[in-house]
Image (cartoon, rainbow, N blue to C red):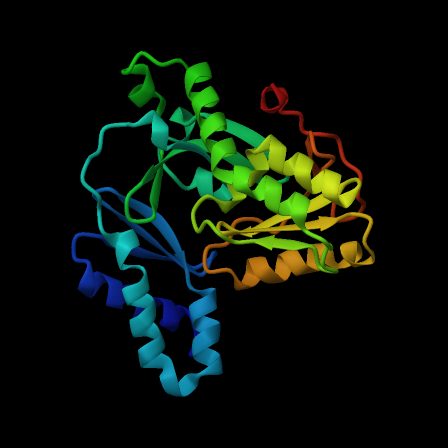
Length: 276
């Protein structure tokens, strides 16, 4: 099936099921942009399209399963008062942020390459939302307050990884794939103790990739397979249900640096407040 016709078929499925939502085809991204009351999300179609190509006899069933699987994302949540205990750093690509309204009101921290972290609130039902500045200022909080809370909450969320990394008896040839958090997995890039644990266990620089919002790849730069790491990140990014970035970062356990596709040298991106 032609990609445009396929996207339109899925669009009509969503429109008929969620009448309060506006669904538009984003041909450039091969995705559906869904907006409405409490909704603003991008739904990639490539994984579903390729699955339908591979199993042509099961297309209706695959589409039905897909539509059912995203129901929680398309259900607007009731208004909930801002809670600082639910604030976390969230990592997405710059293109994702640029497509959303009020991006200028978010508290952001560039990570390098095409990735940026912003303060978000975790809501019930596997939903997160970027928190605009007026919501915390109305509570008497400053940017520094919110930044500090999000940093602490993010570090606590990924603290169990520190011990797991340290205890591993061997490093797999293809490194680590961490995929335990469907919304905030990339946020471990803002957990200093996790970065330090990766570097200490690896004995030096570590390559990092966030091809999907729910997966982080990590590989010691000293391993022979490091030369293939960029291709691995690219493949996962292309196959991802919720793609984040095709780019690669590296860390020495303290700082994050973008890795050039042509050479593995680049100026560091310094986030001094992470080390405080």
